[in-house]
Length: 260
Image 1 (cartoon, helix red, strand yellow):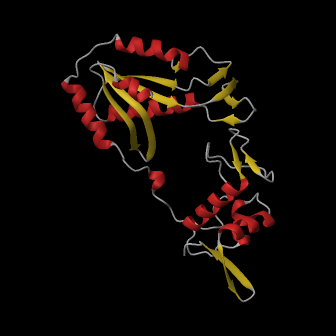
Image 2 (cartoon, one colour):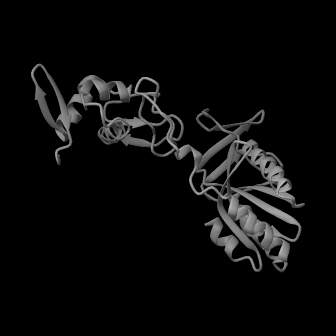
Image 3 (tube, rainbow, N blue to C red):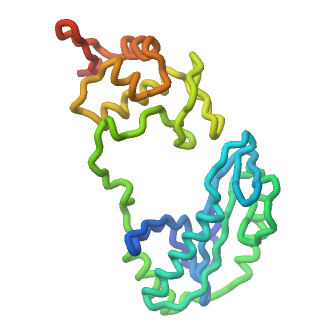
């Protein structure tokens, strides 16, 4: 949504989803625009629900600590400033932390002009529209440079060598990507974001991850019970038996996908 709003600004060149590697450090920029001698850097968050700040630490209302997005904003701004200077350009940088979800609320919010809350967005965009500038040659030059240094693939997608024993075990919440911590018969409920998921659905997803990561390992109840960490042996056995085909080998057995 914020990308579409930025696209309505006249004579503003907008770059979205940039990823850079500089001095062996990788960082990502949600949106970036150039106006006059200033680079506007936007970090966009789609947080939903109630949050609060206590002594510069951010929490969900449940008390779960989350990463401080202001620290992330400042880190990215610092890296971008050094990167731009290294390219030979002299631009000031204005960074903003943009919250776009109207269902987001932050208790004890600081008086920080870098933070733009959902109800402030229309006024913020109105103020940006008041600025007018033609795209100068120097703008085009830096834009071309930034695009040329963009790394399409995240370094985190370059899969390193790994083993079953080295990887952390557990089932990851598909909503916030933290690990579920407790089993509750029918559902798994995320302590971090409150997402609720059927146990069967979570285990089947866990099995798909296991078979993708370890195609050379046989799919057994024991393996999935260990990989899921929090799901009891009997529950894993029931779900696998109902959804996969058993292959018996003497006293041992394993499972394969029914389509194979």
